Length: 164
Length: 251
Image 1 (tube, rainbow over the protein chains, first blue to last red):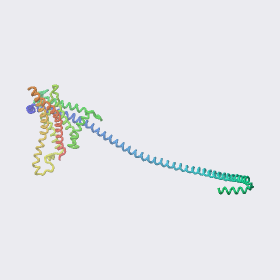
Image 2: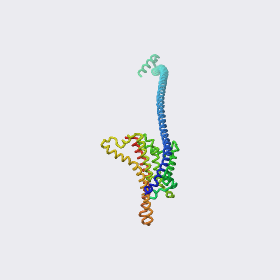
Image 3: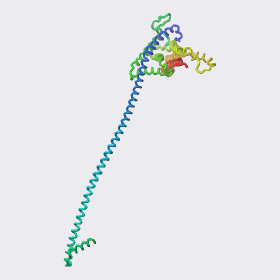
Image 4: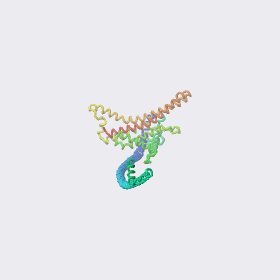
């Protein structure tokens, strides 16, 4: 085993070079480079944490803004609904009054028309009576040779018309 | 066993105060490991906010060590990240580089973690850190480490020496574990490869009977060795951090 066989001649050189080279590794790499690498990692972790915090803050702000917007929106909607309801009520009232006016106008015209019709009917009935009386006078004169007075004929006609 | 032999590449007669410090193949592979590790770490120095694959890989390793120390030591573990990271990555890269099939291009990898002169020094380094931190933070109170909390006095008399021995054994177990695991793996691969070569040399029959199964086994064991390379580096770093935890947070 050379490790033991060569021990007397190599131990000093092994020790010396190990101390020199491991010392170099320790000071150049361990103390020089490793802290920088770890700093980079730490910086990155910090940056990530900061970014996450910023994102969280932005999200909270957005939530707040949304809440405020929602409140405003609800108020606006209520106001709009109130406005619409008022307009609707107004329109309904206007329509009702107009309808009433029109209805009244139509009613009066209807009444007038009915009165006119009644008058015409009465006139027509009187005319029919006259014509019927004259016809009855004529018929009586021609068939029976009886001279019937106008008043008699008229009363007879009236009686017949009432009995139907 | 030739693969574990240390040969001086430069300055076979460089002496400092009577001690030889020749630049050997072992030292060369330590340097290669350090340079490869440095190149790997360069990928983590791009410091982009959105990391690429390479930077991500480096950050995964630092994060892994950071998490391990935080889990084992707590908030105070962060100051040991440079040491544990250097230890873990140095051992990991050494183990993995030693497994590279560079022999194909004529360059023979040398796994310096298969030498207890290396693993032992690394283990002693961890052990010294434990002692320094322990006595620095807790003074002589650090000796209460050998008396687990809640031990009755009579039991403590027996338990304290046992705890002391187990404590003093830590650097040995730490260093030997890595050295043995790396050496065993390489020896196993060498034995199996010698089966393949000797089997075919003995004829086609032996080649088919011994060489082919050995080769298949070698492929599987290579995968296992890559796993072991990672696990041993992890175990070394984990145990070091656990020992440091004893010193940092005395019960």
